[in-house]
Image 1 (cartoon, one colour):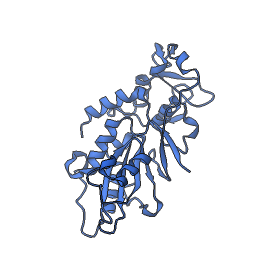
Image 2: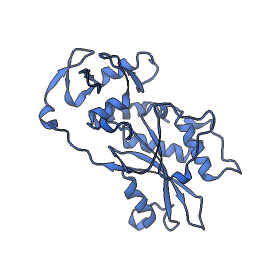
Image 3: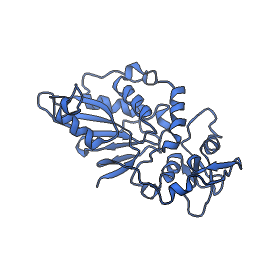
Image 4: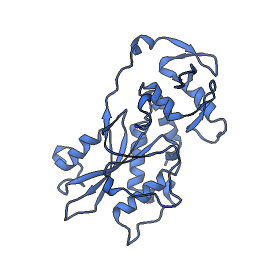
Length: 269
């Protein structure tokens, strides 16, 4: 089954199956994984990269997705490509002689998923090809909110929610600050018995009250119903695609992209 994800920003790993170049790895960014692998295998003149052109076929074996914006994904891509130039990954040792390129790049990304600021994002590590799957080394398991998934993924065009245009100008009161909040600035609890809604900023501050040193929430307690919720779950609920949360990784809303981009500008890596 192919999983579809809205607002898709992913960083992928390609594996070369060409006998002459077998085992080579390429790391890239995409908003459409199905189209991108086709471009790589079609060659540079069809949109593929210079480093992959004429060296195929390539297989897209792993993709990390759930980034809040292209900027966040591109910075993750750069660090994965250049781990020894990133101050966030200064602890990662260089590739060993007995270590394949695939194993090395898996070790690098395993460390990245545990390092700030990426460890706080609602990411998913997805193996697209089961035959290349590798387990995390002891001590390198990702945080619990970053799941490991298997199978194909597809970028999905945003579907407008029913009545979205009519509701855009409507306002309600923020549960926390009691000020008016526009639909475009609102997050709501997804539990059926809870009608809580509030400003993105207010809820972020509420989630971070026990983690004042952080800027980006991971999870927290709904201030109304007291249920524990993932920040990524609230974002997906805003996009009207919470129903398949167990199958599809949380992907962030354009509404909070500017907030996340500012955070990444502050957390320069």
